[in-house]
Length: 497
Image (cartoon, rainbow, N blue to C red):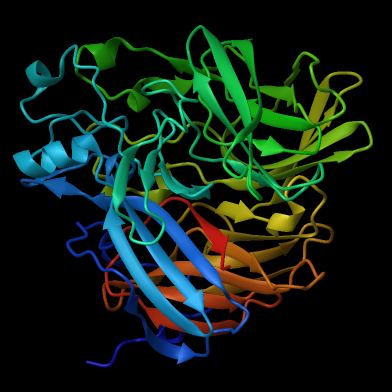
């Protein structure tokens, strides 16, 4: 059988998809590879691509016939796709967390999942069992000499960057306490204050929540070392996945969310299923001064935000005394009820994400939010050298339809100044993941470079890597991956040396 290319899948204007094509991505990954050469389907690998695309996401979907209730509960699996002199190699490996090893040995689930997976045995096996496993499945970054698999409710797991072998829980040289949260969505500062940094946070939620803001060096002899930190307390239960940075601020959007732990303690629901939109309260922007900025040591600012729910932000920047932040808004917190099968989810019944821009006025402590794009989108990013600065272009995963919800099937480049856009589509039988924008070396043009995106190819029930020209989204090359990768979460690009 001839391997189909993504061009075969690209049918512009087709608004239909097959549910089984989409859901077929959700299957256990049963093979691990180390540094094997990839099969090229079409095109040529750009010589300027030098480095590794690391990705994380769920790789274990069922044990002993029991399926996880939500894909976010799947054990983390890292993929590494490395580029050098026009050649490409592939590796993948599960993050061998302590819980993963225990469940592999037992052949069944031993822990409850945050998003709905229960231990076998019904309510009696789950009641008052609050022990959750660190699934290390949300993101993967390199900090210092360690590759870190991140899950935001606990410590990261350290991996060998070359072999992907699991080293073990990392406390970052004693910086983190056991099981202390460490964000799965850090931001890389390209050099707002002399040199690049990694900015990240940890949350201790409760009636009074604490945010620990941390900044790390990413270059030179001090790479991987903590540069600064601060702790700030805020009223309310903090449910935070992402944040944004500018040269002077770290910006958090605290969604108006309530948490009722009783069904979780009684074994009836997962922790995430106990979250709901709080119609009696208002979402808030929490603005924390960065230690390297001109407002260092000052107290945070708290400003009302628009109604809605936000997982991810695109970018933020400063416009004189105002702060601009672009975010993907949902009408309410999207959740999968305990009796639903995520593989059969009806996209028409869950809210779509839409890109909006908020202007925060620090002088009068107000904010105003406007719609940028109606089209359902997720996983939006700018050129990484524009992180925290005004950017003209963004790239994002979008639904094929221009309105309403649907699976992510296309990549969109959006001009944030005039609204012009162009698309690359994998529809009707292809589905896209988070796009990664890799700038072309030595170019000063913001949209010069490549978009790397892992595709679920529903026709052959496998995954491909597609390389697009960032300027016009023309397909540069497509490579067949040796495994099927379930719809995943986040990743990062590490430049070659």
